[in-house]
Length: 234
Image (cartoon, rainbow, N blue to C red; front, side, top):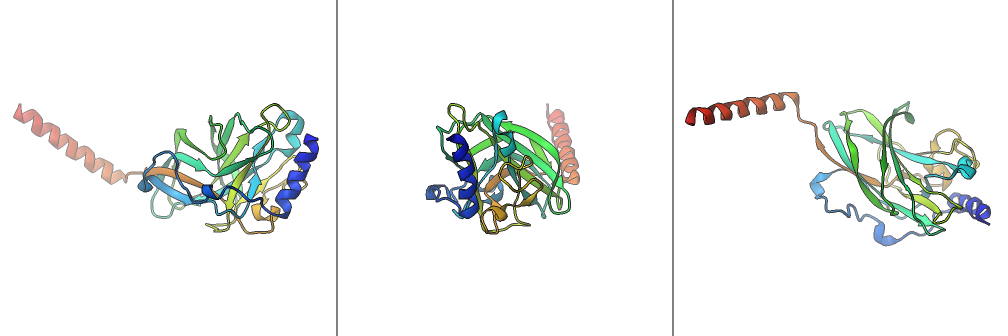
């Protein structure tokens, strides 16, 4: 029965996105971040929600993940936190956690993995402080990917869907199912191919601008000057 449910989920995704909780859309950060901390924002709009999940060994053929391009044009940034919009379906919905990956760019699609983290959170929509901050250099394209680590047929299993948005930033979001269990996406494809829409993935990043080398040197000089002044006043 669970196999039937898994396969029917493919039909659900391929025909139309299910109606999701409207309270999630555009809500942004739920963990107290100031608006000034958000350096990249693509909130969900209710248009679609697509599978991005690491299943148990029996369903490895269904392992799949999405990825979306990010390019900072005004400065280089350290990415310190991620926030992901998602939904559960089926089961009692308790994931082990989420894989957080960053790929380099390979001609408009994700290339090699250059950053890995594991978010130890157990909710559908979640925020995570990266174990190590990620340096995103100015004018370089990166692909951010988030994948639920959630069994389907085991106790507390189910499926997780990454929310999407029809507002495209850069190029359309990508999706891959290397094992071919879903019948498409053995290689990277447009995520919208699953739903007949042009979509990006819904997520936000927080962080801060990387200081200019000259700024850092000037700050050090000023600190030395202040230190010298204080020493002379003793």
